[in-house]
Amino acid sequence: MKILKQLLFLVTLIVGLSMTASAQQNDQKKTPPKEKPPVVIIKDKEKKDDKPKDDRNKEKKPQIFFLSAVNKTEISSR
Image (tube, rainbow, N blue to C red; front, side):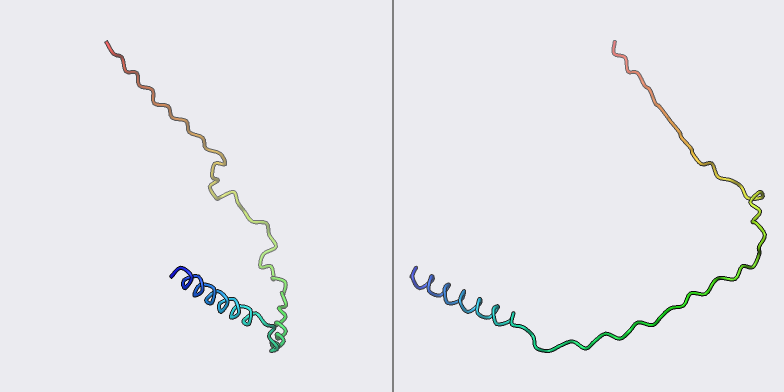
């Protein structure tokens, strides 16, 4: 029985390897060449206002905010 299992395993292994080797043969079909992509032309954006922006009226956000909170509780045992 042990020899039969080994023989069946060996036959299955040989068949599987031969199938994978035949699947890896060179493919003679060549893929068609890719089409050239369309060329995108970027136009300069027209400036509506040449004046500098007035940022004085806008509220300014703080750049750094640091908060340190410490909770100290003492437990005394008497």
